[in-house]
Length: 253
Ligand code: OAD
Image (cartoon, rainbow, N blue to C red; front, side, top):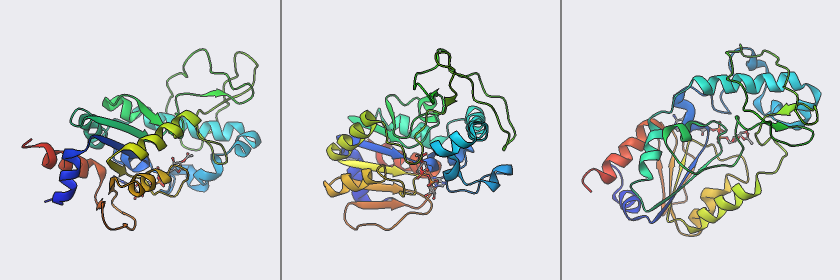
């Protein structure tokens, strides 16, 4: 039985923001950032591979890591949490979906207009001239974790392609972060799902919503501390908590 105030906030919300992190894709088999990396990648720290310096020093090592991640995502399927978020969009007047994830599982679950704060694996660009490639990347094979892969050359300048993600030390796409902050300011309910909330500025998004008097719900098997009023937590896996929440909030409505 969920808190009646939380159910009420969901049923009466005019604008819901759903803010997701790596935990929403965990049940699809995609390792979160702060999990131990598997296989050979145990030797590497994700944060030290996700920088321009790392790419400059060893492009094949970094591109190989992202090709491995792309192959994991390619073989994964949206889970009940992604599907519940897509379903929620038709139950509330307005829903804005903001993700820190670079996978495309929200889109494959049927969500429209997904704002990707940290870029997308499938959107590489040239490391040198910044232009997009003319054709999409080929479907990844199943590289074993740890295999080095040379990045393809840019058709315009011959420079190496780089993953279309935001690396540490880089700015977030301005249009995405502006849109996310505006939605956080305007919403009356924000649901934060599967994020450790340690990477800024994205981690500010639930804070902004709460300060401006929205109700905030955190869904995470390991939730952080709560503020008190209008701040709720469901200490559960997203693929269980979200379908249960929708069921209880909308079943008889
Ligand atoms: P993290 O890996 O930091 O955190 C994942 C969170 O998901 C943790 O708090 C877990 O407890 C939670 N979790 C695990 N399984 C879950 C489940 N089944 N349901 C719900 N929650 C679950 O991932 P993020 O917070 O997304 O940045 O990381 C933020 C950013 O740090 C990433 O976007 C990436 C990384 O460095 C960039 O690439 C710029």
